[in-house]
Image (cartoon, rainbow, N blue to C red; front, side, top):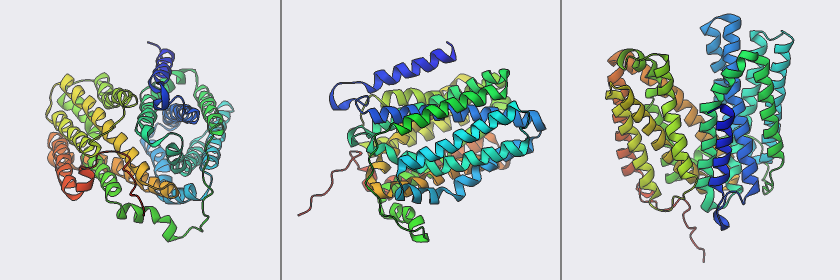
Length: 428
């Protein structure tokens, strides 16, 4: 199957999965379709951009140090600007914030293409433009994430979240491969196609019929910047799902050890490592397909906890496996279980958070997710250096199960929660 056929297959699946009769059709909500197309195009573009930038900088420098700088210029804005971005998302028109952010990214990508064609693209220029793209991406992210609840009814939010997650997983799987394939024609070709994808995303966002109540403007202060943290602390269910995600990802970071497993334990080559890296994304993609066509209607709290526990068990199976196919099945399962819990967590946070707080809450959530991903890889690496690879990965799986047990006791209302959208108490 060609990459174009795969993409057309993804689009065909989307049209089939969102279409049904009556109010249950995501396709009936045109603004959501435009939103999905925008996220899909920008997601594919960003994944292609990540590949071509790494290749180009390494071709110029042949230095691992400069490859590390790419991660640094993307990480710093995500930590330093996220709370401010959340504040802006709750104070300004979110669609306009997203449009400005994506226009800046489009212009920076166009500058990368022009500099490459003119043979002016050196390391400083590339890293500087990537920093600009990273800043724009961080500033738009809380606004983009906070728009979804206004595009579909609450009953469809979980399905909409799953459909959005599927496009992200598809971009992660196919985007790098497509970028690498096109790189043989020159970096400027990949940059040009990425710019086209971002332009389509800008057009789709501009077509959204997104109505946001005029927000109450407040000057930025420590109180407003950290209002999201305060809100999360005061809502047990929201605190429970966000902190569960933080610790589960922190302890379950076995993917950082995949090169060691591939070489020393499973005795396979680069092709095997590629399969191991792809397995969680494939599992998440297939489960996301299923979730986007079915609503989660009862026992959502227990389903979420069982999914995180399943993630821990699958991580433990992978840790102890010395067979490539069993390891692939275990990693496939980690991706599937993670997708179930991610959809429930994402929808629950969106539904339990008032619209005027969504930006700041999503900003705090994104900081936790980004930090736990990176610290999880660091934790796995340090444990592997101290105790060995297999014990380090096994401790991660066992730790995830321990966290699930503790969180079920610490957050009983979350454990007993039946529906994503809890009925609002009636006032006298």
